[in-house]
Length: 249
Image 1 (spheres, one colour):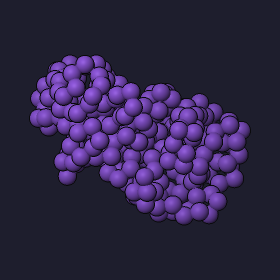
Image 2: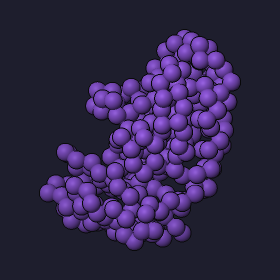
Image 3: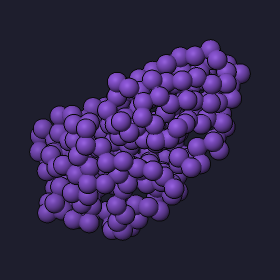
């Protein structure tokens, strides 16, 4: 079972830490069930907009972030553009997106896509939702949305395929303990080459990095971080894997 913590100390509030399912048609009449698409190995980025001119800048950052994966992960990362309250017409939303050169895989004007499920409102609102576990990897509003933040969250969602209880079942045998931790986490892995370890928060921000030449284990001091849910990402020159852990202190 995946252990999740409400992040109240990172500068924003979540209503929840996993996605809310919906089944509805987009503006082209195509039916979408969110959990089906996540379970089919997709990463979904949703941006709610008013729509308005300021929204276009930050919704555009999210769209550009998705497009940056089009070549490396074709068809894996999808961008959904949604009206904030589902009260603008599809033709208006489509025209607005075209006017600001925002590329979307699907456009929605339906209150079933409820941004209130993801906490604080503010336009635009951008979330990154990950496969299998339906985890929220990014949740930001208005000017706090950045392209690099969305890209980091997408990368993490693409490489995070295991939950805490399954964390040893990956190619590099990455494990971390104790979990939850109060500040020090022991990291075991199997690698024939040096590795880089990154700690990433729920905004997709890299908050701590550590390189090591040890091919078996290391220790990371997390005492300077706020409590909450994080992702430990390990990268060699040929592989990347990650797992979730909770910091309680």
